[in-house]
Length: 412
Image 1 (tube, one colour):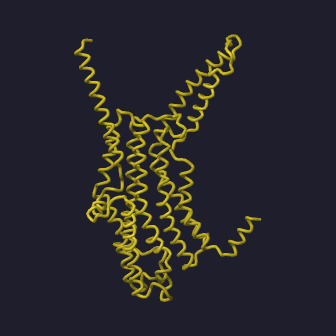
Image 2 (spheres, rainbow, N blue to C red):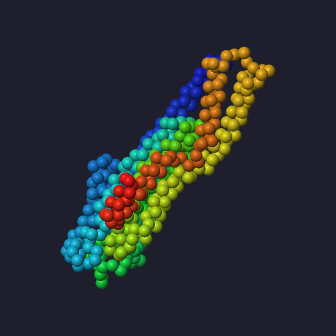
Image 3 (cartoon, rainbow, N blue to C red):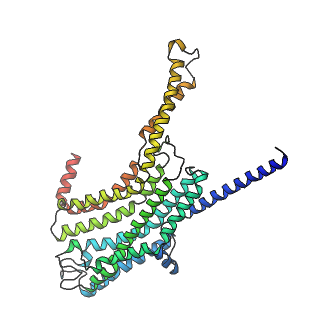
């Protein structure tokens, strides 16, 4: 090779290195800007109002504003109508567990959780790159997955459809299911002013916030599905027992506040039924248990999209690593165990025994590898978030003497 060829090839190598660095930097930049909350028509409206962003003060301000819009007019209108407290109706506004919990606890949580969950998603996306899971040749496809998810987030029709779905029950003139047949602050013979605000403003806002979280979960699921179809550098012997994808479990654990908010709404409605319609705790167990199960299954769904890939990785690793273990163990046996070929070396301090143990440990890790990247801590966190509001209702509905008897029995 003459000097000219060497210069040309050296220049090409430098260009390829620079291109690779540019692709890596571009992918990392997209990953660090990844967001499922900072986009869409509603976000653009907040930007115009100067209320967008995930800074703590802005998030708190948004949560407070929405809580005031959904709850405060109900209080004022029910006070003016004489239904806020007293005995004029069976269920006055200030004694309505469901409405107060929904708008003073659940709605603020749905907004306050945006910044923490979005930050956790961003960390997970960046981790795909920093952990080496995405090879250099797959960086353009990884960047394309981020860009496609961002474009879907910014489309108008999903939020338009969610707004329509939030108002649809109002159009169909549906009332509160658990409060049917009970005189309450919504209105007796006709809907009260507070009832109109509840139907036309407060409840649609709550539904919209819930639907928007469902849409974000769909976007996250679609992103994981696209990324899992890339040729990632999976490591079957990874000690997270998920071929290196165990970190995804942290993204689902971040949803504990959302699970708690939904559980609080269900629990408050059950408390209303027990208090004002004579139901018992045992008769209302089904909706509480069903919510806990469905919430956990729903949050597991995004991780199920990588299950086919993990099954394939585990199957191939068991076959290939199994062959390696067999060959290694055969060599070990010939060297140290078979009498006619026994080695004259001293076993003590020899690395052969250590390699035998290490290889066996690695194969055990592969055998224990799961097909869904979720750990027990995440499942426990989600279960506790769903169960905590139900425990409060159970304590509320259980007579004090029964609680004391139960405690004494447990201590005894």
